[in-house]
Amino acid sequence: MTHSSDHQGSQAAASTATALPRKITKHRNFPARIMKADRKSFGEDYTEFDLHGYSCQLAEDTMIGAFSQPVHLNVQTEESKAKLEQHYFTFVIGRGKHSNTKMSVDLSKAVADGLRQAGLEENRHAGKDQRGTFKIIADKDIATKVVKVYPVMDIQVAEGSDAGSEEETVEREVERLQDMSTRPLTLRSLSRTLVETRCLAGNLTDDQRLYLGHDLSEIFKSLFKSFRNDIESPTFACTEEDKEAAVELLQLELNREKVLPHIKDLQQRLEKIEPSEPGPELKERRKALRMRQKQLQELEDVWDRSAHGRYKFPSVDAMTKHSKKMEEVSAQIEAINERIEHLLDFKE
Image (cartoon, rainbow, N blue to C red; front, side, top):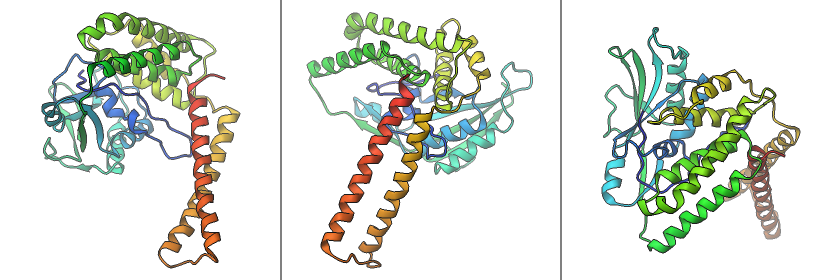
């Protein structure tokens, strides 16, 4: 399988919260992440990803999270920008009846539904010059069914910077990953940090690899040991967010040219694990988040009505207090989101 890479490493992941809108932060953009997780196909014009192991709901959510916004990437040259603007994604969504890899017959519909919800149009003539489109292809020769996605690409050429500051940035990132490898991470956070480590290692220059390559290798080994121990533990329990991130990591590892031992076994073990309910604090924080989001929506509705002449504040002081209240609730939402992310990333 192939993954392109010609840009700076960024953090991995997207989080799914029960009964809450799926939150995809730009620096954890799914397609951008899988493009730079492996440099072995550098220069290819597409990225291929196998959706084996994905449930229909997870596949649909992934398409929405991945392509609702343009795929953002940073590159170093105008030449790379021009090339990546033609990039597309191939997702394997079905295999023949004689294949050992079984996929849900509804996976194709789920992926298509997710892409439509993300704003893409199905077009049997979809191609590199028709951005924002997709098409489903059944290749009878190799008994494989795929969907080819041609999303809108947001490629930015990074501003020039001196070599010294770039070296310092890379070293700080290695130090951050080293620190993360010593902390009690959840399976979700372990999966993301492993992908980040792969990304950074794949984007090192030859000189950087000489003095940082060993450190990154040791970081990866430490993280992967914890990842494996968690999944192989007979008492292990994980959330839906944990399982989603781990499924993605294992599929990325299976797509690499050199597959690590135990990857397929871990994938099979993970498929059998039923996600557990979120902990009490996480449930409470999510409930509080929903309440604050509803409160902010009501405040913003009043403000919007006022701006369009459909409501008049009794005084300037009342309008000022209303504005400050919106800022206060927004800050509360941000703080709650930060705590939720912490609970999803670190074992208490």
